[in-house]
Structures are given as structure tokens and as C-alpha cells.
Length: 135
Image 1 (cartoon, rainbow, N blue to C red):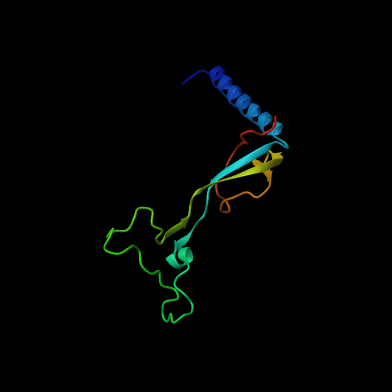
Image 2: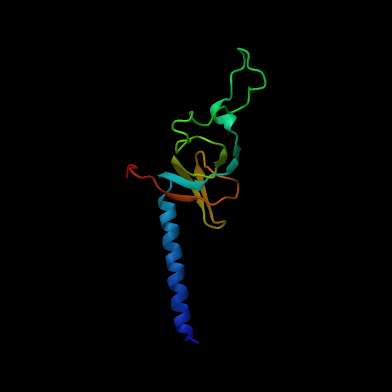
């Protein structure tokens, strides 16, 4: 086991690092920030939501919410890459710019941010200085 003096030096170094981090947080007051978060997964996107379905009139019966043909005729005989199809929406990484730090509460480990913060409740955010922000 290391001597007690070494433990005190390690503890002092850790506290100094935390204090430096707190000073850095306090220096951010009013700074322009951006927040990165993985957005909330939405749901399965139906094809009708993407393409709109068939015509509503002109003799179309029972075809209002159908997708129609996926590809062309016998030539080219396949569906091209990138064809929009049903799939899962949401869950992408989202960056919101022009957020500002409203305050810091070190006792409760809170960073108060003014602006439209993305993501779900109790989700994790990555806060960083905005690229190109005035110094």
C-alpha cells in the first residue's frame, strides 16, 4: 500500500483537476455552444408517408394508400439502388447550434443551457464550443 503522503498528493491533484474543469465551465458563461445528441427513434415509416400513395379520384378505387410500382418494366428489370422504401425513422445524430450557457451549478452538477436542446428526456448530450464562434 502506498504511503499516506502519496495518497494525499494524488487526492490534491484530482481536486485541482476538478477545480480547473469548474473554472473552465464558469468561463463558458454566455458562450456560443452546440449540442450533439442521438435523436429519439421515431417509428417505422410507411411508404405512403414518403410517396403519398395513389390518386384520390379519376376512377381510382381501393388504391388511395397503395405504393404503386417499385420499378420500371422488363427493362431494366430491377429496382435501382437508393429507391425509397419503408423503413425506420429517427435515431440519427443531431447537432443544434447557437445554444448559450445560462449558468453553472457545481453543487448539483448542472450545466444550464439556453436554447432548444435536442434529444429525449434524461438523455446524454455532448456540449462543445461552436465551430467558428466569435471569441
